[in-house]
Each structure stands twice: as structure tokens, then as C-alpha cells.
Length: 320
Image 1 (cartoon, rainbow, N blue to C red):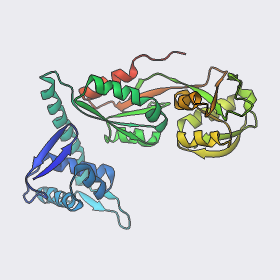
Image 2 (image 1 turned 90 degrees about the vertical axis):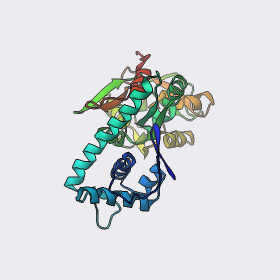
Image 3 (image 1 turned 180 degrees about the horizontal axis):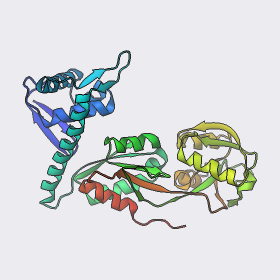
Image 4 (image 1 turned 45 degrees about the horizontal axis):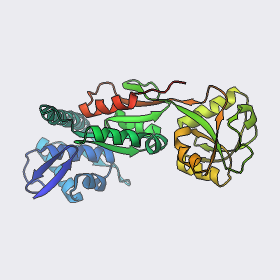
């Protein structure tokens, strides 16, 4: 007997791979995971089966509908949906969403909020701002689970739109067709430097004082970098780029060892400020605010657990 874990519930089958043309709900889950993860090994790992079992389940589906659903891309590891596969994938997502809703509705009969909320977020928010909220959520709803993934903003938005995750949490959320944005508390962007730097004893710095200074920056496609560049340009300030990184932790370590200054969201450096690893100074201008928001597909009915989590995240908005 093989146990297959599916977010929020457990299916039990008597044998794998399937030897009949009967469809099981977990087969649809495996198919969708394979399409979204683009990897037989990852799909197998997520569903606690072997790669050969994944292959067998795909063949079972193709035999049942007498249609080719997937094709391998020559010379690459990815798989591609055929036209029939596109239709099948879309309807599979609907079936899985309906099944999850059924499970949730039955749990709701006894007043229990359960299921897994899949959330993708950027590192700076996920590592430093979400953990207390996740702990609060789990305390209030112990039968529910938050499945948190870290990624870049573009990937987070893409995963929300294609249905891989239910919620995304990003900085500087942009309005897009088919996307709903729920504002969270905004962050103050601050200047950080090593404790021995000349700015270390200052509590407030004017943007014009940054002219010509060495800076460690986020990479150009990171929304916080785009906002920083825009603000600096609006004040006619040019800084000297010494390094670019996509990870907030790497930026902090680089500043700590003296590479240069950096502008980062304040919540991400509170621990280092407390431990005197980094000096933190407020930027004097009112422009240095980083909006944060939850995003989800407008056409998607959120699970009860997801609605509760969004409500928790949007509470107590910080006003500047």
C-alpha cells in the first residue's frame, strides 16, 4: 500500500503505478505538478512516488483519452503541453480546486479551517516579515498549513497567475490584468553602513549626501532597485555601483565587510541593528517607502484558509 500526500488530505492507493484506465484524483495532481515543476523527479518527490510511477500515470492518462498530452523538448529536460494537454491541464486545475473546496466545505461543517495555503514571496519579506504572521495564523488555525516558497518577484507573480500558488507576497506590487492586490503594511527604506563608517552615528541622512558614494545594490530587475534608482535620479544623485545581488542577505553581508552602503527595507536589518553588526540611518525624504502587498488571481475563489491568512496580513496597516 502506498500513501500519497496531497495538500490538506491523504489518499491511499493499493498499488502504483496504475494498471487500469481508471482515473484517480492523485493522478491529476501528479500531472499538474509535472507540468508546473517541469521535472519528473520533482513531481515524483512532491507526491512521494518514483519517477517511473509518474511516467506510468502519464501513460495511463494518455491511453484513457487516446491523446498525447505531453511531449519532451529535444535536448532539454523540460516537457511541453500538446494542444490536448493544454485543455486537460486547464480542466485538471478546475477539478483539483473543486476537490479542495469540497474537502474544505466538509471540514467547515464542524467549524474547522484546514487545508494548505501555498504562498510564494520574495526573500526580504518572507524571511523577515512573514514568520510572525505565519506563527500567528498557525496558532489560530492549527489544522491549516502555510506552504511558503521564496523566489524573485517576477517568478512569484508568474506562479500566482498560472495557478501554481494561491497567494503571492511582493514589494511594489504592480497592477496586472487578472491580478488582485491587497495592500499590507508598507516598509521604510533605510540606509545601512558598517558600524565604523562616518554615517554610523547619524540618525538621518539627506539623499544629496549620497552623491558619489560606493553602493551595494539589488539587481536591476528587482523592484526595490528600480524604486531606488528612480528616487536617486529625481534628486539628481549618482552613486558608484560596486556590486549587485538579488539576495537581501548577501547585500547585508557585503555592507558589513565594507563593500559600500546600501538602501534596504528596515525590517530586514533590525537584528543586525540590534546586534551592532550594521548601523542604520533614516533617509530624510518622504519618498523612501516600500509598499508591500498580497496578490492573487482575480478569477480564483480563495480557500477559506487563504482568506483568513490574507485578512491577517492586511490588518494593522502602517501609515506614514
